[in-house]
Length: 512
Image 1 (spheres, rainbow, N blue to C red):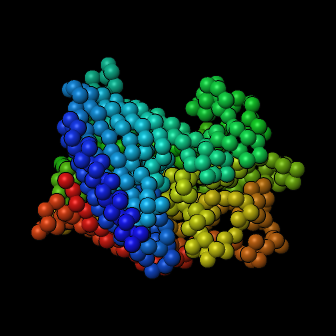
Image 2: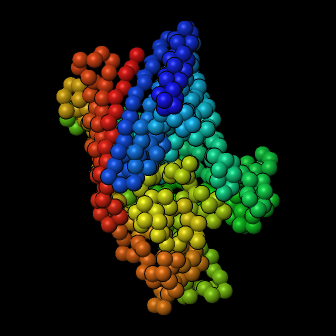
Image 3: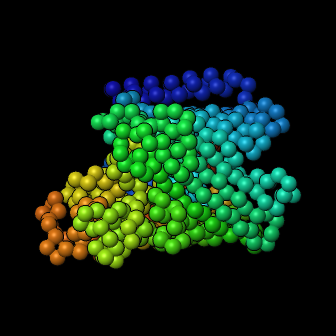
């Protein structure tokens, strides 16, 4: 009876809100209510059933979700438009598990945009629907409370007669309270330049993402304490020198990451082809010497058609993050003072993407990766290894961020009404330098008499690279006999040396 009461209360509240909004003077109003059911053969979902879905699905075995969404917009003038959206979720018919998925207001003036609240979005993703996910913001985690402004689409640069365009966004976000460093913040920005009107156009850009601030359980409140401190977050060229954490004074306040993005775009008949090469970095060793020392990359091709076809969009990605400025120690120490004792490698290595010595939750929001979902989190590893994960004493939120991956994504139309989306990913997972060496500043991988891990084994869990495949196909269609109704089905199967897991999602939606 309690579940039925919760369901009735949710539906009545949603339709009351919908009625109140429909009475407003809006140019358009879209209302959708949907039911989603997710199941799997293991105690957790296959990767592509939960990944890059904006944290919609819990990683547990079964999810029943009732979702109500309201979107409205008002054209104020020829250039000025106001819009907003509210999505409410009810999990497993329990009011205590309900939450807002999206709740934002947005103003557009020409191509300039300002928005605030919870909004599903990505940053620097060339194929957000079928790609493996951006290194920056992939749409994997649930929306983060954010204030953002900028130009999300390419805009003509003044005085170039339309031959040069730019785009860029500036975002300030607030992470959850329940973290090791409570109420930490996230700053994100990107900026791109692109040629236009040429047979083949070049684009260059850069993203920058920083987790910073918050309240440390030992050291208390962390910078920024003033605007000068905030500038050292925005422009990572120095530090304010007043952080209670010594490492933040010798390096930078916060934990910085980003990528350089290079691309070529050409139009052939009704197809747009984009070839891109992205170079990720986690600290200054990857940032300053990104050609010499940064061998990692996200490289891909995207083809998009302007018409409905059996294949209307296609992407292939080759991802390599195994190097991370090399296996050399980050800094010299008493035991390894020079390159010779560092086994011939230069110092400044072991970038350890998405992990942090101070911000122990790493680059996550509510335990989901904010960037690529292909890096394996502690939660996922606990599923894969039945809770026996090596190196937990190092507090790494991502137990494997060194990988080689190949990803294929396709979407298109099987008929006039039926669309599909398919993903296939192959990964080789090599763990992290820190756990492989029993410490960030150790070289136990070179020690024939290495001490055992916390599980009693002397063999690294990811030794040699564990191979894993992730697959998914999704089909969507309106229901021919029920007006305004649509249905979609998702089937996913993971197999390899980490997991064998089958799952499916059945969904139905009613739209007004």
